[in-house]
Length: 134
Image 1: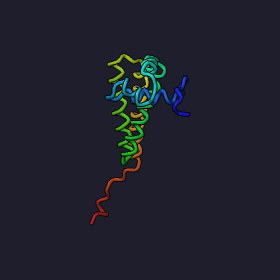
Image 2 (image 1 turned 180 degrees about the horizontal axis):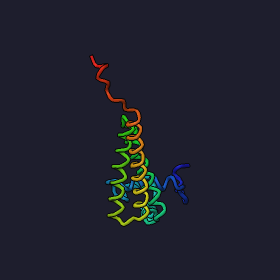
Image 3 (image 1 turned 90 degrees about the vertical axis):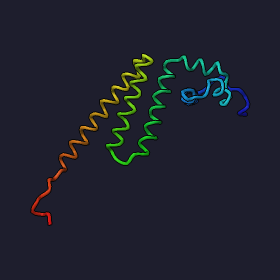
Image 4 (image 1 turned 135 degrees about the vertical axis):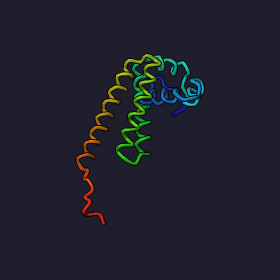
């Protein structure tokens, strides 16, 4: 039954296909791999809403991958900041205002998280008492 060509593809499938198209493979090879007409993938790429969802999902997947490999809250904040800066660079290059806004929002959240981590570290800091040193 899977061999029957689908006339409608759900949004999740489209987003996953678009994410694949961000990589080094050609649209034609990705379409062939997924068993869809390349014209469908080109049409989805021209849909701004779908592309925004695909970019957001890709950023989320990258963040989850990065966060999964980190050891501390500080490293998570650093990873988020780096990703937001990269997204802002892409937004500037493509003149994508929506991506630029999301990048700025993410940078602000990372900055606030960093400030909170610093405040928590300063609040728990206890200077060494020289009388307790042997």
